[in-house]
Length: 62
Ligand SMILES: [Zn+2]
Image (cartoon, rainbow, N blue to C red; front, side):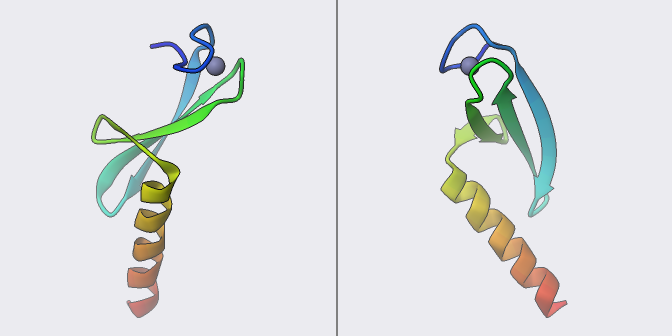
Protein backbone atom coordinates (compact mmCIF):
# COMPACT_ATOMS: atom_id res chain seq x y z
CA UNK A 1 0.00 0.00 0.00
CA UNK A 2 1.15 3.53 -0.67
CA UNK A 3 0.66 6.77 1.22
CA UNK A 4 -2.85 8.29 0.94
CA UNK A 5 -1.34 11.77 1.05
CA UNK A 6 1.46 11.82 -1.51
CA UNK A 7 0.59 8.44 -3.13
CA UNK A 8 4.27 7.78 -3.72
CA UNK A 9 5.80 7.12 -0.32
CA UNK A 10 5.90 3.70 1.24
CA UNK A 11 4.72 3.82 4.84
CA UNK A 12 6.50 2.14 7.71
CA UNK A 13 4.30 0.32 10.19
CA UNK A 14 4.45 0.26 13.94
CA UNK A 15 2.20 -2.25 15.64
CA UNK A 16 0.73 -1.63 19.06
CA UNK A 17 -1.95 -3.26 21.15
CA UNK A 18 -4.36 -0.97 22.98
CA UNK A 19 -7.16 -2.45 25.05
CA UNK A 20 -6.38 -5.80 23.50
CA UNK A 21 -7.00 -4.51 19.99
CA UNK A 22 -4.46 -4.35 17.23
CA UNK A 23 -3.55 -0.80 16.48
CA UNK A 24 -1.15 0.09 13.73
CA UNK A 25 0.56 3.38 13.18
CA UNK A 26 1.77 4.11 9.69
CA UNK A 27 4.15 6.84 8.80
CA UNK A 28 5.09 7.85 5.30
CA UNK A 29 8.83 8.00 4.83
CA UNK A 30 8.46 10.51 2.02
CA UNK A 31 6.03 13.22 3.21
CA UNK A 32 5.83 12.39 6.92
CA UNK A 33 2.07 11.83 6.90
CA UNK A 34 0.94 9.73 9.84
CA UNK A 35 -2.24 7.73 10.21
CA UNK A 36 -3.60 4.90 12.25
CA UNK A 37 -5.75 1.92 11.75
CA UNK A 38 -7.47 -0.33 14.22
CA UNK A 39 -8.82 -3.71 13.23
CA UNK A 40 -8.07 -2.76 9.64
CA UNK A 41 -10.13 0.42 9.80
CA UNK A 42 -8.60 3.86 9.57
CA UNK A 43 -9.13 5.82 12.76
CA UNK A 44 -8.34 9.36 13.86
CA UNK A 45 -5.77 10.26 16.48
CA UNK A 46 -8.58 11.11 18.94
CA UNK A 47 -9.70 7.48 18.97
CA UNK A 48 -6.13 6.34 19.49
CA UNK A 49 -5.45 8.73 22.36
CA UNK A 50 -8.71 7.96 24.16
CA UNK A 51 -7.90 4.23 23.94
CA UNK A 52 -4.43 4.81 25.38
CA UNK A 53 -5.82 7.08 28.11
CA UNK A 54 -8.40 4.54 29.22
CA UNK A 55 -5.79 1.80 29.23
CA UNK A 56 -3.54 3.97 31.42
CA UNK A 57 -6.48 4.60 33.75
CA UNK A 58 -7.07 0.87 34.14
CA UNK A 59 -3.38 0.33 34.86
CA UNK A 60 -3.45 2.99 37.58
CA UNK A 61 -6.44 1.33 39.24
CA UNK A 62 -4.66 -2.01 39.10
ZN1 LIG B 1 3.36 10.40 1.82
